[in-house]
Image (tube, rainbow, N blue to C red; front, side, top):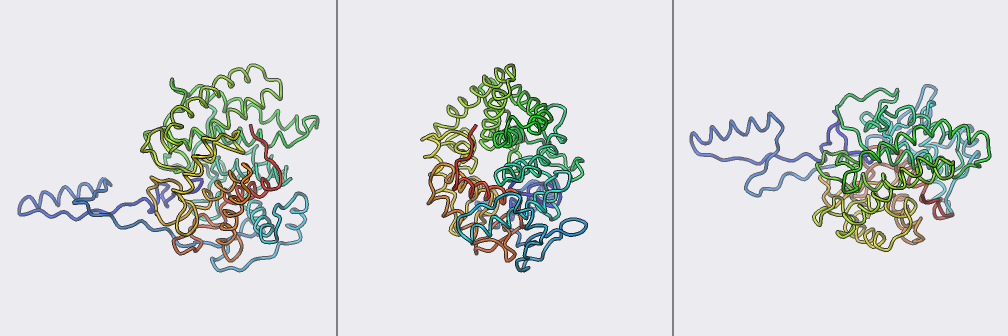
Length: 446
């Protein structure tokens, strides 16, 4: 996902693989049965028989412990690499903005998260999700959060570079691919586009703009560059809403195929449409403001009416199961709502694992013992932006405790409390930074 369920060929990872049950048939039936099993295996169908549980999925061990800048680009660090002190150039860059955190440990985590994002962000603004194999791509979702994190820490040049790159990657129909190569080319794995980028990117543009002085000629010029991207994205969403007000079904941050509308798509589109509408109002774009106000109202009503009665689960059903995406229905992406706050509390109870981290969802098909750091950080951000300081500190403490030896934030934490998968993960770094800033000052809400 932007928390990434990714395998080497781009399909759902081994985390989501299932075992093949053993069939037993007498005589000729046995031969036929074995032939059928062979056919099923050949076409990739996974079966279990007689109630036998498949082998439990497992999580990859840590693949790299961090990154540092090199003369020709990022250098991956081994899993046991100790902390590397910032260079003079890195210290000078940090000083251009701010490092959030009111304790030495949180400031150290924030400093490393900022430096990790800086290394993962290429000169043209492309943001690698992580610097390893199948993660070395640009996910619009991850990059939009990185732009927001650069914005709140005062690194506006980097934020604007990322937003410009996202604008350049937008398709003619106003949407984005699920991911891109760092050179902007298609990945070529036939993965369907993920519409949540149409929420996250306009939200990030709005988030950047409200932190600027609108009277500054540089701000006006930059917005003039980005506004066509916002307009195309907003119109693409408005034109795709179904008769019931919800977006079309499709893959979201879980990176798995689905035939249902998910909260992981609806929630960011809700935030993005409201952000786009507010941006149109602030800039005097009356026609767009009118179009998107109606679409935003329809979508928000549909989310309340279809997901709300079930406690805002992953899909609009009592069987949908809790999902981390519920955190994106509240601050800093939407105004506080008692029903959403209650759903976030219930979801946290259901999704918190024995190791202290968060599982993506109650119906998650991957390793049920591995916590995901972007999801854990999303709950921290909701708490911080909602005024629940104790809740935010608890999640942030856990994240600080489970960094790699080099100090980077990994994608996952395994059942034994050890960092797993890859580190650093850009999305987690960005979310932690936003959470730490939200503890110090209120973040804008569209």
